[in-house]
Structure formats: structure tokens, C-alpha cells
Length: 343
Image (tube, rainbow, N blue to C red; front, side, top):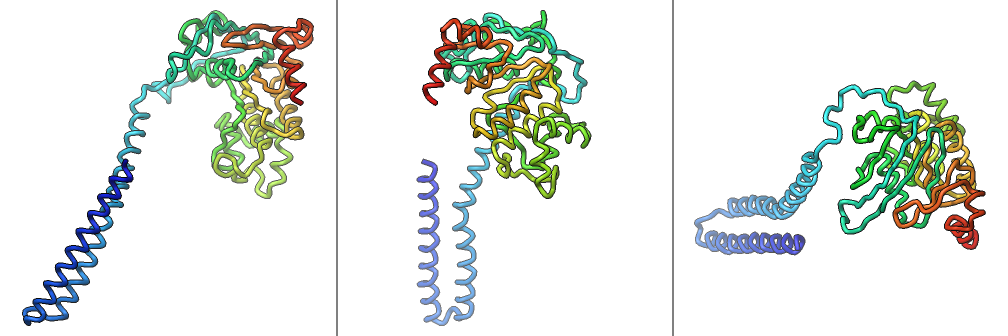
């Protein structure tokens, strides 16, 4: 509709300009024949008219750009007008520790965009200090939603997220998130160099600490292969790096942050077998000695988890260690069988 309106407006402007020029030419020619207008003055006037006409003809494009700009301003103002999660960004954060039991109790949740679709339906989940808890299940079971709640991107509609005996909504949000690290399937890298992308995990880190984190993430070897080393520009969203390299940069970032709680959302599902082995080795080093929640697509990556929780229809329907769950022959055993059949 907007394009049709702009096209109509531009056509009107062009028709008006050329009509006016045509009239000027006829009138000027008549005046020249009558000797009332010198030819040099007439051609000068035509030249000036052409310049003015060109400027007027550009009004349609400028008006279109103005409309797009106003639309962009509205989008920006929608963001500016949103309530801040953290009111004082310069305030000091209290010293929090998540090295204790984290629980989700009887949690129900709907996304605001789809209030009629309940994603979590009475979820109960316990993450003991130092445990590696794996969340498995079919697509749409609610695994990534659990990660969003643990990161406090959303709050439960009903139920409670607790750290120890304290409800999470009573804890300082910045302090809480500073103790949590998240490694997603699609890693977000910025268009700067490798050093700044790793340092994003802890802005005050020294170069020595960055190098140590890169080594522990199995990223240092490929970083050294670049002529500029840590000063290598990764391109917008990290396009200059492979998927496995981007994952290891994200892991180095998480190692540098030294979180109490680590959340991995299918961090190896999109990688080839060689990259997966390297990234999995880095993840194993990262998870050692800290609480972690692993959302897994490839069940072979979570066989050694402290506890595997099988999710279905927004609930945990089965939990235990790999051998225990396989022995039961329930939901988990069926998932493993289906994945083996799929190759």
C-alpha cells in the first residue's frame, strides 16, 4: 500500500513538472517571436527550470525516506519506553553465590506473545551444587524455556525459582546474571576482534587470562594460526570463523566469566563430528566442578550426566542416570532407540 501511494505521488510530481515545462516552452517561444524575450534569457530560464524541476522531482524519494525514518524512530522509542530490568546500571552489585541448590517448583509458564499456549505445566526441577543436569526430550517439550527461566529472561506465571531457600525474584538481577553463563547453539559474536569477543565474558580480564581461557577452551591453536592472533577481526556475527571455532570462542568467554551456573543449549548439535569432539572436550573442561544444565539433542553427549531429566509436554516425566533410565525402558530408552534408528 505504501509503495502504491509513493508511486502515485511520484507520477503526479513528474506529470506536473513536465506539463509546466511544456507550457513554459510554448509561452517562451511565443514571446521570442513577438520580440518581447531575448533567446539567451529564454534558454537561461529553461536551464534554471530544469534544475528546479530536478529538485522537485526528488521530493518523492525524500518523502519516502522521511516516512521510513519516522517508522524507525517509532521502533526505537518503543524500546526506549520499555521499563528497565536494572534501574541503576552504575550501582554496585551484591556478592551472590549460585553454588547451592537451584530449584524450579510447580512452574507454569506461557509466553506473552501466545498466552493461550501453555509451555510449562507444573514443572519441577532441582539442580544441586556441582551437578550436571541434562534436559532431553522432543522438540517443543519446553527445554529452551527452562533455560530462559534460569537466565531470568522471563518470570514464571505461577510457581517459583529458588536459589537455596531464597526466591530468585528477591535477588539482584545483575548479580544473579553475573554468576550465570550461557552457551547457545547459535553463538553471538560481535564484529570486533577475537580478544574483545572473549573479554566480553569479563571486561576487566587481562591478556594472560584471555589466553588461558582460550587454551582451556581448545581455541588457542586455531587463534595462533591467524596472522593477527587475538587481534583477528571475526566479521559481523563471526562470519570469518567456522561453527566449531565460534563455539570455542563462546566457551572461552564462559570460562573467563567463571560462572557458578552454566547453561548449554544444544551447543554441539549443528557441528560436524570432528568439531563436536573438540567442542565437547572444551565443554567437559568448562563443566568440571560447577553446576550445569545441558539441553541435549544428541543423547550420546549426556550419558555421563549426574542426572538426566526427560521432558514431555512441559513437565519432567522421567529422571535418573543413563544406565538407570535405559533399564526402565521408558521415555528415555525410547528416545535413544529412535535416535539410533535414525542413524
